[in-house]
Image 1 (cartoon, rainbow, N blue to C red):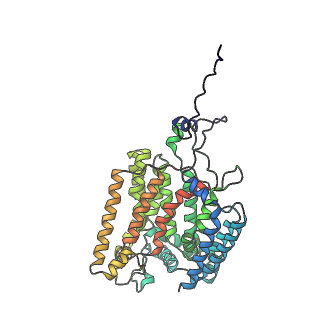
Image 2: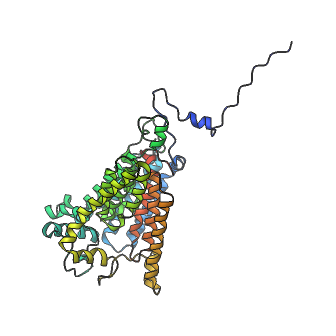
Length: 448
C-alpha cells in the first residue's frame, strides 16, 4: 500500500501580496493599530551613516560665506557657524547616533545661539530688524507702522501691518536684549514648526483600520533603542540648517511667515471646523504678501479633508484676521500704506529696492528690453497654472499641499523682478519639512 502523502502546504504570501498588506494593518495584541512604515524611511535610513558629511558641507558653506561676504553680521555668523558645524561633523563621525544628541547641540549652538548672542551684544543685525522695530514704534504712537515721508531705502517698510506687532517689544522696552525683534521672529517660527507635524496623520487610513487615535510617533533615523525620537529634535535640526540658521541669527523677517505657512496646511489637513486653520492662515496673511498664496492652497486642502463648509469658514476667519491687522493701518494713512507696501516692492517709489539677487526675473528686468513685462507675464502664467492645478487636482494630504505651495512660491521667487536668494527659504522649508519631520518624531505622512 503506497504511503499517504501529507497535504501540500500553500506557499507563503509574497511580501507585496494583498494578504500581507492587509495583515500589516491588523491590530496588535494590545489593541492598537500597527503603524505603517513612514514615507521616505528608506531614504532617511541611507543617510544615517552620512550625517558627518552633511555637517561638514554646512561648515564649508559657512566658512566660504565668512570669507566672501561684505556684510558684518553675515561674516560673524559664518565664523561661528563654521566652528559649530565642524564640531558637529566630528561628533557625528564618532557616535552611533549621528543625528542625535552628540552633534546636533553643537550645530545649533554654533549656528544659532552663539552668533545670535554675539550679534545682539554688538547691536548688529540686518536692516530688516531695524525696520520692524521702527515700525512697531510708529504703530504704537501713530496707529500706522509706515513712515509718512520716507527719505531713503531704510525708511521703507514693505511688510504688512501685522509684522509691526513683532516690533512692539522693542517699542515698549527699548534696547534690552529680550526686546530684540529677532527673538520674536524665532519664537513664532520655532513654535509653529514644532506644532505643525504633531497634527499630521493619515486619518483616513487610521479610521479604515478601526483606530481610535492617529499613529504614534515614528521611529528616529538610526535609532538604537525602542524609543520614539523627540519632536524637538526635528525642530533643532531644522534650526541648524544653514538657510534657516543664518536668518535666525542675523534677523530674517520671512521666518515667522514660513512658520505660519507650515502650520496652516497642517491644521487644514486635520479637518475639523476649519477655524484653527483659518486663524493660522490669516495670521500669515497679515505679515507679508508672500503668504497670500497659502490661502487658496490651504482652503483647497480643507475642502477635501473637511468639506466646503469648513473651507468657507476658514476663509472667512482668515480674511477677518488679516483685515483686523491691515485695515486700521490703511485707514490711519492710506497714502503711506500704498507707497510702502505696493509701490516700493514694485520699484515705483523712486527708491531702488535692495532685492537684487541675480535670479531669472531680476536678470530679465535688468538686462532685457521689456524684460520687466516679460518677467511679470511669466509670473502671471505660473500663478494661473498653479491655480488651475488646484481646481483640476486639489491636494488631498498635507504633503501634497506643501509641495504645491512650494512649487508656486519657488516659481514666484525666481520670476519676480525684485527678488532675493533668501526668499528661496520658503519653498525649501515647505518641501523638506514635512518629509523630514516624520523621520525625527513627526507622525506618518501620506501622498496624494
